[in-house]
Length: 331
Ligand code: DGY
Image 1 (cartoon, helix red, strand yellow):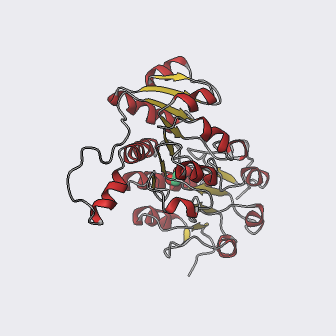
Image 2: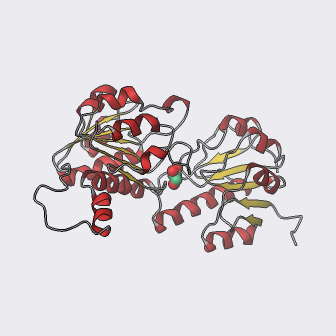
Image 3: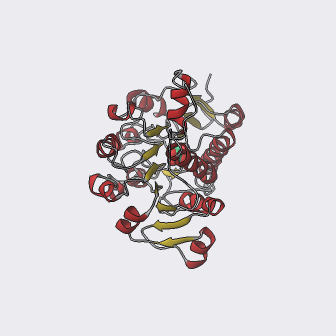
C-alpha cells in the first residue's frame, strides 16, 4: 500500500538490488522487474503520479510523457548519452535531467579496443568457422588480418571516452590522431599522445577509425557514404557512439563490397533491430550495445543515477545535472 506522504519514483528497467533497496527506504518505488522496455503508454501511465523517474537509453522522454507527469521533478537517465530525453522540453517544464558521465569511460574504451582487435584479427569469424568443424589443417595463408601495433588510430570525438581510447594506444606503439569540434588543450592532447587532424584527413589516413561522439541532429549520419569512401581499403571502422551517427545502409554496402577491411559495431540505427545486411557479413563484429556492460560499471551507473535522483528530490543539486539552467518545479 503506497504512503501518500512519500515521494514516488519509477525505475523503468531492472537494476541492482542494493540500489533499489536504498531507493525504497526513501521513496515509494515502482520498478519494472520484467525488464522489457515499457511501451510509451505504459511508461506514461506508470510515471504519471511520480516525482522522479530513473530511465534507460530505450525510454523516450517526450513532451507527451512529460505532460502526463505534472509532478515530475527529475529524469535521472542511467546512461551518459541523453539523446532519448527531450532536454528543452524538460527544462521548459522545470524538470531536472541528469546522466552518468565519468563512471563508464574506461569500460567503454576497453570495449572499443575489444572491437578493434576482434575485427582486425578476425576473432569472431574464425571462432565460428572453427566451431562449425571446418578446420582440417593449419594454414600459413589463412585468416590474415590487420596489425594493430604501429598502426594509426583515428578517433572522432575526443571527450572523456575518446581520450580513454587514445591513452590505451601507447601500449601498441600506435600513432594517434583525433578530430573534435574543438582541439583539446595542449596538455590534454599530450597526455593522450594525440595530434589534431581535419575530419577528412583523419578518415583518409587512419588505419583504425573509432567514433565516439554524442548523438543529436548535428551528428546524425556523420559517417555516411561520402565519409566511408574516404577510408583506406585496409581500414577497420569502430562505432561505440550511438546508432544514427553512422548510416548503417551505407556501411553495410561498403563492408559487403569489401571496400574496407572490417568493422566492429556496438550500436545501430533502430536498436534493437539490426539492418539485415549486417547478419551475413563475415567482416563485421557486432555487439548489442554493451560497451559499458561490466558489472562494476553498470553498478557505478546505477548508483550515480540514484544519487542524482535522491539529490534532486531532496533539494540539493544533483552531481551530474545536464540542464543547469532549469528552474526546478517546486515540491
Ligand atoms: C550510455 O551510457 O550512453 C551508453 O550508451 C549505455 O551505457
